[in-house]
Length: 169
Length: 456
Image 1 (cartoon, rainbow over the protein chains, first blue to last red):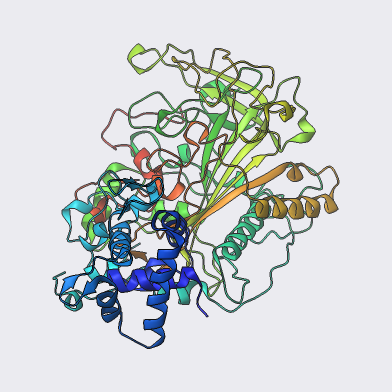
Image 2 (cartoon, helix red, strand yellow):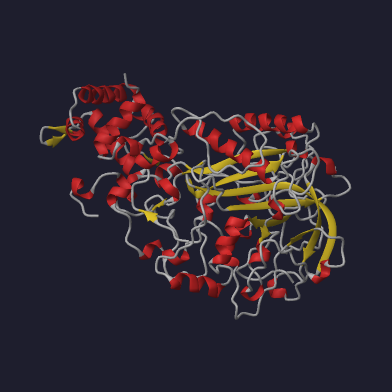
């Protein structure tokens, strides 16, 4: 039986297309998955989170492919779903990609206009930079002169070959 | 000496092949053998278990490097560490000023004795501790990284630093001519694949890799108890400066004084750590933790005074002149030791006391070890993750990175993140600028230059 954290990582992988072992490495010195899960739980409410994770776990147990799981969570036929779970899922996608939490709807003291950079590491590790084969503004671990060379491939950064994503490396 | 940058992803199979090696047990022991690489002990390694393994590597390295040395620098296997205080293995290694000489001169052979400044020659022989000349582009040995400032002890005296390298690294520098600017240019021009890559320790080949040691020493005053420290008789040398544009006017001096070890970085490049393993130790009496209530900071400490009203973790005001007594630094540790590291320290300190209940080495503690948690196999570096995901994210020694402690990215001390920025003098491409995580190569001087004489 998977934990909430496992299901959160699995759901996040289905939503972003980034492998689970990249989102939550076996040896993880940063620990964003647990940070993110703890951060979003009160903001989307435990009830919505439970519904979302149960939906994911049920579909995953039926061996539904990740892209189909994402479609089931996010879409209502050919239109974006307007449920709280779908809204929460979109904010979770943006959280991984940008390190920013965009409050999807008002609940408790949280307003739908709220947005927060979750932490310095959430910003540094956000996936939009890697997908762009770049580094965050103001933070680089590349060696001197890297700007004068071809960046590593998209697969090196994300674990996903470029042709699987319709992009070029 | 070539480096290959792997184009494979950083987290996948590499992690399994590099870290998930067969499980073995590691029992703390006292050995003069420098570990070749980390020993992974867990059946299913975790961040916590691997940190423990690397911390154990740090202690084993600390013991081996501080083992009593014979006159030739080899460990004296006929005794054990700490029976009595004396010359250690690493103290026989080459100091940076002996490698990067004035006008890019060729270093003297490994076994040649260190040359002394004239001002020191008439004094009782001792270990030369000097600050470098106050010149641009050369790190001063009494000023810490990023010119963040010197550290002043309770006697108002500056601590002194030094950097030494083992023979493997010395040979890597000398054999490739990297000790001069022109030598570096020639090395990179000789072959389009040439890149700086010091040797990697390997359990498989039973080989110790390149090792660097950076030590901080305090001059022992009348209130300091020599029996608490590893001590050496030092020649504390201050080069003269008559150019006010290079700092305060200082008269050249050399004083024979006893000094005690207060901080020790040990950095080892290994097959599972192309970004090197960064181990750092301190004297247990250096500073209190930031989270220790003020009323409980009773000490006495070497770099903190409970009665002082000075600001915490602030460098002394400029100008920095080691010839003039300064207000003692008021330092606390920003990131406390973990409970696991404290427990390991207790284990090893107890082990050291089995040799000698008064062993000076039991007065030192591991602060932590920074290691790459996403390594590539065979000492390679991932182009997409060049630092290999350092764990922990930050690491500082209170005597060596005093004023850049903390957990702020790009501002606080991270060994790998900082040293990943090190460059050679040939910055025409990433291949030629890469210095393999050491700033030492920036100390190389031009053979045609005026010559900054570090040796005097």
